[in-house]
Image (cartoon, rainbow, N blue to C red; front, side, top):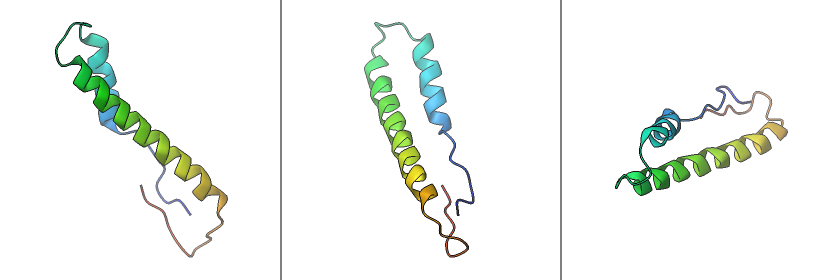
Length: 66
């Protein structure tokens, strides 16, 4: 049973907002894009795991917290 629903990390939204306001030629832009990609892929992985955990009927045996 999933006790707490999965929510995107705030850092994901913060990095995306920062990239929307930075010029393309900014020296920190590649580093922020890499961090955003890491957070995005991590969140997608958590969503994939949550899908399969939802398929398993654990009943009251276990609880899942994110």
